[in-house]
Structures are given as C-alpha cells and as structure tokens.
Image 1 (cartoon, one colour):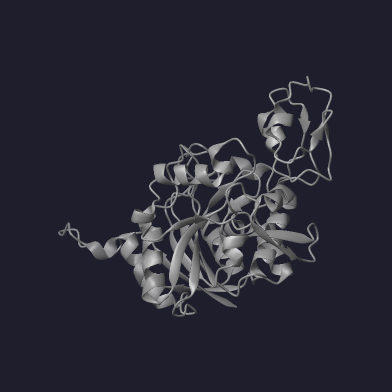
Image 2 (cartoon, rainbow, N blue to C red):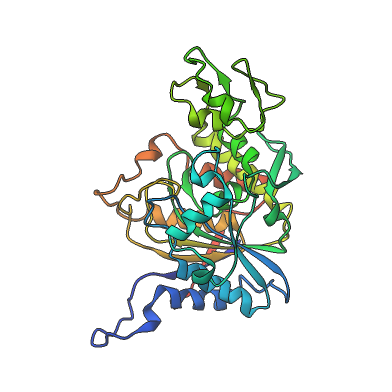
Length: 361
C-alpha cells in the first residue's frame, strides 16, 4: 500500500474576524505538503530535476497557476537540486503548440516565464519534437517509446499535474502527464493512432500535405510509410478530409498512455507526483477554452507513485456532486477513465492500493 499525502483547498480553520490569514493560502499549504510528505527527499545536491507541467493552449484559463510551479521549484532548490520547468511539443507542424518556439510563446501568454517560475523553461523534445531517446518495452500495444531527451537526461522528474477529465482518455492525471507529456512526437502519434496516415478519395491533389510534410513522405499523393515520421501534419492541413487517420479513444488510448509512461520510467530513476485537484474541467488543458469546473476544488495530492495518486484523485472526484452548469462528464460516455490506472498497475509502474495521509490534521 502506498502513502498518498493530501491537503485540502478549504479555509476550514478561518478566523472570520481576521482578513489577513496567509496560512490559508493553497500555495502556503503546498509548502507544508512538500515538507511533511517527504516526496522530494530523494533530491541530492547538484541533481538536475525536470519539473514537468502543462502550459495549456492559447485561450485556456484554468491551467495550474504559476505560483504552484514556483513553490515546487523553490523546494527543489532548497534540497540542492537544479530545476528546470519543461513541456513537450504537440502533434502536427503548423499550430504554435507543435513546435518549441510556439510552446514558449503560449507559455508566456499563459503566465509561465523563467521569471514567474524561478527556473529556465526547456522544451524537452527539441525544436520540432524529434529529439528523443528510444526505449524498448514489452507492451500490449507498443514495443518502443521515444522519450523526450531532456527528460531522459534528467536525474529525476517532479510531475506537477492539473487533475481534470479528458475527452479521449477519461481523465488526465500523473500517468497522462508522464505518458503523453514526456514523450516525443512519434510516440504521441503511436498512442493516438494505430496506423500510418493514408490519402483517400476526397483528395483533390491541392498539394498542401506535400508541402507541409517534413520528411517528403507523400509521393504522388500516397504516404510512403518507410519515410513517414508520424507527425500528423498532413491531417492537420488537409481541408478536404483527404487524409485517413484513425484516432483512438477509450481503453485503447488509455492503455497506450500507460505504456508510454512505463517507457519514460525506464530512463529516470526517481519521480515525485503532485496532483492539483482544483479547477477540475471536463476536458484537457490542450483545448483552446476552459469550461466551468465539474466539481468544487478538492485540494493537492502528493506521492512517489503515479498509479496510487491518480486512483486517489479519481476516488475523491467521483464522490462529489457534479456541477450542472459544466459539461459534467459528457466525455465519459465513450471513455474509460480507470483503464490507465489498471493497465499501469499491470505494467508494474505503480500500485492502486493507497492510504491517505491527511496533512490538514
């Protein structure tokens, strides 16, 4: 059984006659959680620590507040580590989120800078998402994982995750933050799509896909699989629905996310996980908007086990009454939110049995 440390977001000890009560701040509570949980105790002097988070998409308004990331960064420094904050590029080649330059632009717009975070920001998989270390695994779906190089080169990873729901995987917690957020573009493609793209009868031979393809893999309007580097740019630019691409969801994508997480864990020895169960939206932060939260804020969870922490967040979430003015689990009609947890457990990257250690007591 794993310990999952928790501190809630409520001001239940509020002295109503006083207005200045900094101890009630969730940022201050995070400091207490870090110190009392011991989740960062593995950090040694000089260790290079990747602090993995999600900067969101342009237009998203409920990503993690930069102050939370800064508190983690400061705690890493206090323990002698050398932190950097990191994210990876998204699938495609055209949108800003698909390149390191664009990712940094969006990060700044959403309040994440080296100044606000007190650490450099490094896009872990390079300029276009192809800087990686290949790792072999014996997965049900995948046999190799392309781990973002800056992640693989780090001494440890501290995962700062905005816990929320997800339109394809059911929920987004630490498993997803590692399994999707720490891999390079080819593995992102593999976990989303089971086969290479192909050109169908809707193609009008406009040439947009040929022009955008970075590996010149489209010849005579056919995708040459041996040349394709799995970026999905052809699908991204096609306005005629002329690119055939199968997008996975439900159990299939959830299990592939867990397998990618297993590959990442083969490259780095130590991990710490912080799940922020606040502003729990019914969709991922990669959406260009943020719907109303589905439930009231719960608090912050901390653990060194990604499976246990995600299960604890899920269990806490399902007990709460849902907000009727939110999309309210609409995406769960076709997803499997527990598949990540169960498959990750079978892969041996964590256990789902946990004990809550309440930091509010």
